[in-house]
Image (tube, rainbow, N blue to C red):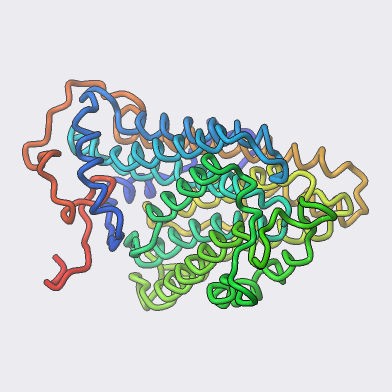
Length: 455
């Protein structure tokens, strides 16, 4: 495909569009918080005008989430300088709004009889972008820039786990939400922002403990596997200097463990449990022929694009003579995050169209140039190439998503952000009477764990 010729050639083939039309959303949810939040979501969607398109609801929430995070980044681009408390509160508010709107877009589609495969694709595409900003904002709110290895680990863990969630969907044909999953993670990050807003970001520098017993020792055991996989990222944080006197931290007497670690020890444990669950699903639950993916391809084939993003990012961050990740953490995460969002969107499309996953992509141009530049002893300033990577990957992602949406809209004869007719309220499902266990948070049919047989 030519570099800048999306409109000269269709991205989706006629066969893919036909498969997309036949696609049915399948979801299994065991989330702990979703049933508790159903009344709030049902009330919120009942207040939503019937003329408001579901995709417009999604994009408005995403824009608010991005804007509030960018404000936080402006005050602390390296994650070291403590941002103002109000920026942390703004991030918490932006994430809550996004989470709420993201949860009612599917309900609004069912309510207006405008459900389509495009809605699912658009929702996942926005989530892939939001994941980057949510993870980065949480790290900045905790001032994790003091420990860049932890920052790298947490942000790329979030990106990789989101990709793996759709990887197992590509393999099994069903989106699965565990008891501790995306909703729980989002509200945990909201709590982190609220703590930073109430007590100040510096509170995460406080050490806690009783005598010689460090409270983080227990949950830290769950991070050992993740630490090995992340090449000593977990263990290297103890050698970093603090912000207190003589490089110490802001600490209380007789206390040994910084509170900044607690949310990330917990997050690492969740990351590990999710990774194990996704691995089991990927290896054992292929729904295609002979245990293959929905497209009949190898269940391990999606690992290649993910490796082409994470591995170069790791090598570039570690080998940079200018410490490009440490000095420009936010730009680095956003640049590689956009590349990861592009390949995640391609994976979602491959699942929905039952097509083979493409390995190479033009979004990898930026990481490739950064890698080659280091190989030739940085003949071009790394920061120039990093900004180029961010600009290139962002425009490539936006243009790709726009072209795919236009092709699907043309094929299904619908509009992306407008309901071009008077919507008819569904007679089969009343929003106010939806059971918490009968619909997932996006309004689609799902199954939950129960004593009775799943239907």
